[in-house]
Length: 394
Image (tube, rainbow, N blue to C red):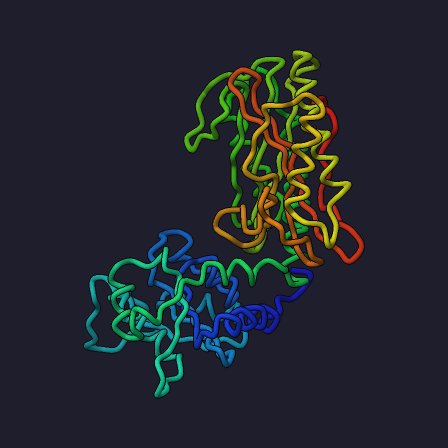
C-alpha cells in the first residue's frame, strides 16, 4: 500500500463519537467494524459470518483490544498496531500452542470471547454505558452483555459507526482511489470483449478473472451486472445469450485491501440499438452531469438529489423515481454506505468524504442502465476517481 494506515486517526474518529454518546466503551462484532477499528480482517467473520469468533473493543480512554482464535492470531499480529491482542484456544491442533494432556472443545464457546472482550473495559463503581452492534448479536451474546452490564445500559452503535466512517483518512482515500481505478480498467476491458453469442455467465466470469488479475491486493470482486431484459442481478448467472443491440450494465468492482469500489458502465453490444434506448441514456447522462457539475463542499446532499429529479422532469422524463442517487463508500460488507444522496439528507458534502453518484434505470422493456462514478470531496470541489462515457457506444 502506498500510504500507511494510521491507527490513531481511526481511533480518534471513533473516540469523538464515543464521547458524544457518553459511552464507556464500544464492543465490535461484525467483520467490517472490527477491520475498521483494528486493521485486522477476520477470516472467521468475512467467510463464515460466525459472530463472536472475533471481537474488538475500544474504551473511552482509547484502549483498543482484539480477541481472536489461536488459529487467527498470527495473521492478526502481522497487521495490527497499537492494539492489544488476546487469543483463545480452538479445536484445531496447532503445535505452537499444544500442551501435553490438554483437552480440546469440539467447537469453542463463543460466549468466552465476549467475557474476554469485557475484561478490556475498566470497571468502576458506576454503571457502565456500553455500545454494541445490536443487529448482529445472537441471543446468547445479547443475554451475556445484558447480564454483565445491564440491558438498559446497552446502546446500539450503528449510527455511531456510520458517522465515524463518513470522513475518510488519507490511507482510506488512497485505497478507494486505487480500487476505483482498477475497476474502471476492468470495466473498459470487459466491455471491449463482450460480443453477441456470449452469455451472462460468460460476462461475469470474464469480469471476475479480469478483476483478480489487476493486483495481488485485490481480495474480492463484486458483481451486480444485468444483461438485456433481465434487470435482476443473478447470484447464479443464467446462460441467456446476448444479442446485437442488447444493453449491458456492468455494476460492481474490486475490493482493494478491504476497501470497496462500485462503478457502473452501460454499453451496447454491436454498433446500433433502438433510438429510444439512446434517448433514455441521454436523459440519465444529463442527470449525472448535473450532479458532477454541482457537487462540492457545503452543498446539501438533498439538493443534488432534487436537482437531478427536477432536471429529468424538465426533459419530460416524468416517471423516474429513485430513493437515492448515490452513497458513501468504504469498507462496509455492502458497498453502499451512509450517508446517501437522498431527498431528506440535508447534511452537506465535506472535504474527505468519498462518494459514488449514480443514475440507474431498470426495465424489462427498455433494458437496464446505470452511470456511476466515484469522487472525493476536496476543499475546493471534487476529485473524480473515474469518468463514465456520455455514449452507449464505446
